[in-house]
Image (cartoon, rainbow, N blue to C red; front, side, top):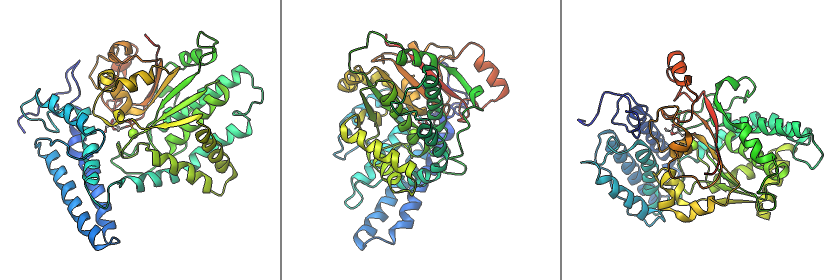
Length: 437
Ligand code: F6P
Ligand code: MG
């Protein structure tokens, strides 16, 4: 492929797999093909249990997924979408826009953020155009397994919440409340280390206990005080409805920690309504969809543990009463950064503008927040997010991609010399807050 360049991504440029010394390059060359192969393997494994009609169709789907892998690896031109999914037109509009910027739009010439999202939308397309596997989620097995593996790790957190009456109306000193909030937020941060797309779907040691006290030195920016100020100081928002938009990421341990934090927000922080923002389609292997959330609560309710059943019942009641609502807008599964939200989906942008706080989970949301650009690492968040300023937000992200903003001077240079893979290993994290403009 002539287009490949033997450098890292230039500064102030969008990440792209054409830069051979960027993380995008091995992702497109090695990691994404492994993910596609694992879907093919699952279909091959399961096809013998299907009826003859489904068996024939599954063989065709395997062929299409293999072709997709070929298109990706050999840098062939990206196709438009034809299914009648709600976002087909938006996706095609965006493909056309990018086609005008390059000679040939391929997995190597288009921005990494776009092509990685495109791959998952393409996988959806393959199933969506089928007759027998329309709503098939090829990652279900993995998400179910990771949830099972996560249960021992979540238990101490749940135990603490119940034994110490953290979610009750029982009076607690403000310092204790603040400490509990800090613990919850750190659990939510570090649970993002468990990510099946970074490990190309492998699950070894994925759900070890979260040793939050030992990992403080891995938090590169910690704005938790600013979040506390917003949540616990009486301010002008007194009297207005407090809405939190919780933009979720992965299933398994991460969603369990997220729901504990969401519970604390309604139980102890006078939050009136939490909108859980999930993915409309199977996404980046482990991202939560509506049905993953449903499965999570169902699974908790069937475990032979009063603790798990307690939380399953409590959280289901929040959903039934509308204290928590679930939303799966298409925008989250487009290949666009959030800077473009007001143009492509003004109604979602306006809805987020009602929030008292937005919580963004994970690496992909972070990449979309800062426009997937190789910023100078000290670039202020306020600059990196561009036009995206609907409401105050906090981003909880472990670093799994070579882009970051808002670091303190000297941090990047120190890490570059000590731990060259610090940006992509998933070991480091940030808790970054940005107030409303
Ligand atoms: O593969 C690219 C990537 O964005 C990685 O940076 C990360 O491994 C993964 O996808 C998504 O991570 P998360 O689940 O934290 O959004
Ligand atoms: Mg994810």
